[in-house]
Image (cartoon, rainbow, N blue to C red; front, side, top):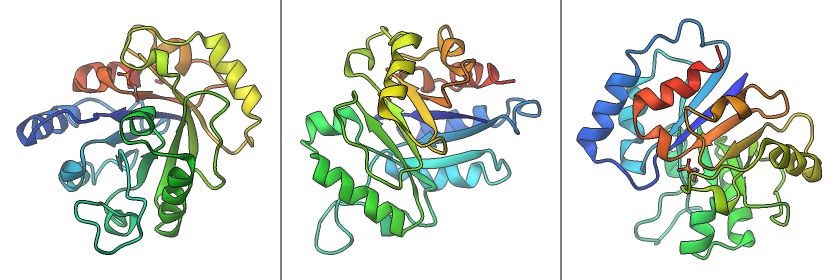
Length: 218
Ligand code: PGA
């Protein structure tokens, strides 16, 4: 079972989100459905729309790209784990763009993971390198080196595996790679037994490219 995660970041308006999902669900998943867990992480407002469209596809789940550090209360604009409960199945936490542009510290990230756990939302926890600490109770770890994100320069398979070994993860924790994964290089990661999936930014914005990557798992 491989995890194929789409991170749309701050892309797409309502029409584009609708077009994406409408096209995506027309593709043939018959040979893939027991081999992949697809997780689509759109901007918050599109989560319910996408969730409704994939109701008949149990191997497609919807996730958020972030979650509030607060439980609830007077925090205008925040989206809490409590709000997401029953709506999102997964949440990305610790993406390097959040650490960099929003100054998210490890303390903040660990708090977010706790809130998600309380609400039974699975955490996709991103790390930039082995210096980043990993909280307990995350559903999976995504190794995303900053130099590889959005640059077209993915990390080498040797290094991705080396990082995995250095992390000394429990054998139950799926290990995902992200950073410039495309339909041209995804097979290097997806066909390797040591790697449990890929987290895709740019190449997930077109449903056809995203499907091509998923198809590698057939
Ligand atoms: P990329 O982004 O695939 O565009 O490099 C990956 C990510 O930031 O999750």
